[in-house]
Each structure stands twice: as structure tokens, then as C-alpha cells.
Image (cartoon, rainbow, N blue to C red; front, side):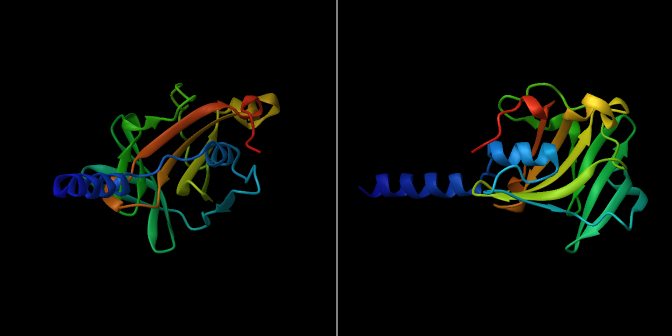
Length: 176
């Protein structure tokens, strides 16, 4: 009996320590840079005051970052390696976990034209960076092709995971 109880407690602790995956509504809202369902809240982050810093961390240069709610948020580069900067940690883009149904790698991230925000729903709260498909993605029907990165803000800081999604937002079924 004691072993079962200990096993149950360990399973509960482990499940609580993992970062939550975003729901389909949160993913589509992030890609769209707006709430697509009444169950989702999208909030743009203030990007008026942009900073940069050479040798920010581990050889990465913070080429674009801003401060939102006391946390540094932005983009960093180290040679060909690129990363999302959040709360003094760099999440390499190459290690981003593709969300289910979004196996294609995101297009090249230009932080200056990206939309930075947070998305929140029952699945949790996520920092979101959403951006168009290169220069073509800024006009005409190409505006529907978007890529995004999301980082779970709920759960333990050391369990945060960088997620990626890329696709044509008008072909993704909106949650009800």
C-alpha cells in the first residue's frame, strides 16, 4: 500500500513539473497574433523600446530584445545559431519542439517584423512570437502563411519548452 501511494505521489509531482503544451486555440491565436476564440486571451507585448547587447549570454548576441513585466524578451544569435530570449535564458530555435500537426520548420524569423505577445487559455499562458513567411508573407494571400514560437509560462521555470508551429492560418480549423 505504501509503495502505491509513493508511486502515485511521484507521478503527480512529475506531471506537475512538465510544461503544458498549448491548445489548438492557443496555437492558432499565436499564429494569427489575435484571439481566435472567446476562450483565448491574446495580449501584445510592448516593443517600442528595443535593445541590443553583444555577448549577452554564452556567446550569444542579443540582437533584439525588450523588457516586458520585468523580463527580457527577444531574439539572440551566435553565428548560425539563433534563439528566443526569455527571462535571461536563450532557447535555441533548432531545438524547438514541433507541435502536433505542424511538422514543417518555421521560416526565418525577423524579430523586427514579428508580433510579440502572450496567449492564455485553459491550457496555460504562453509567450508567443508570430511572424510572416519572409518578405512575401507581408502582402496578398501570402499573409496567411505564418510561423510561431511559443514558450510555456505556467509551470516551473526550468521545465520551459520552446514549441514551434508553421502553416497557412486560413486552412487550420478554428476552435469552437
